[in-house]
Amino acid sequence: MFDENQRLPRTLDISLIAVAVALLVLIVAVWSRVEGLGPKILLAAVGAVVLLFSVFTHSRVVVERDVVRLSLVPVWRKTLNLRDIKAARHAQLNAFQQAGGLGLRWLGNKRVALILRGHDCVELATTSGHVYLVGTSRRNELLSALWELGVPSPTGDED
Picture 1 (spheres, one colour):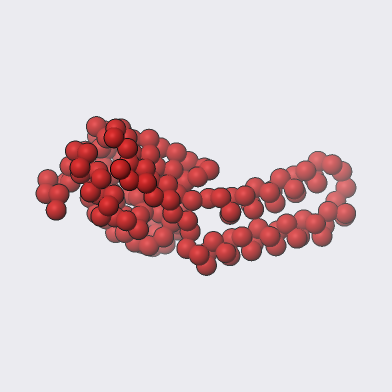
Picture 2 (cartoon, rainbow, N blue to C red):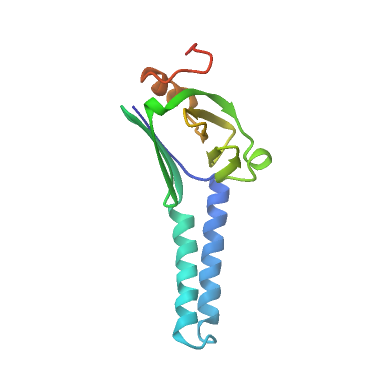
């Protein structure tokens, strides 16, 4: 149906990896000055987590026959049954001005944004009152997949 993986913008992605590598270099530089095994394990763990997070983090949106799967790998996952989505529509979201940055953002009033780049989003309103703003570079394909599976648009006109 629909499957999209999205990474951070290239410049931000490279910057995060550079910060992680710099952190690892700093850890190696201070390693001999740190006494005791506990602090050394903590330093190594922090460095490894930062590096792994910066290398492997991405968002994924999958639409299958009965469900929509949203995830910020490896941190967060959410599965929505299609019957629980009452509307899907196009939305715009400036991640920095309206959500406080990129990534997974809790916006209040049962609103969650999963956005890693750009402004185009698909808004999924659920029967429980939650709203998921899903950043995508393939908005029309995502909406078409949802509408073909019977998820209505808020106005009822799936153009």
